[in-house]
Length: 166
View (cartoon, rainbow, N blue to C red):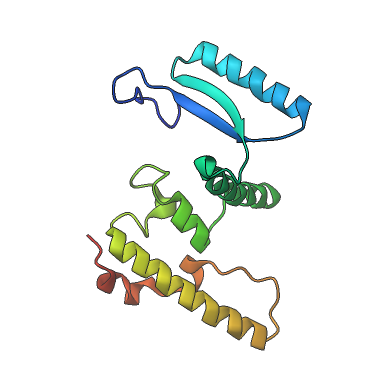
């Protein structure tokens, strides 16, 4: 929390961040999570309670989004580890999920910073349509295993003015 939320203190200065994990029957995993939580809570008063919940429980539907986000992040990290260097390009899903994660001006997300929400949605729609067309071309030419990277495949110069960049 110190890295990403150094100034977080809640609305009243006393609010806590509660942590919810998906329910598991793996006792050793739970024990390690509890130990880690106790360590962090003892060293940072902003940590609240730790709980476990079923991912199909409507009250904890956010676990599905967290699982998805963690999976996408893990894929990117594993790919970087395999390559031994940072990724050159982002996928559409990376642009969507990590648009607001990095500080303004971070070169990895330079394409999305100055777009209004409406323009960003339109850009993603255009990218998804373009990706479908490119993948159809690749299938036609029997190109397998190629990943669609917007910065590499899409001509942003022809579209950015029409997307309402601020």
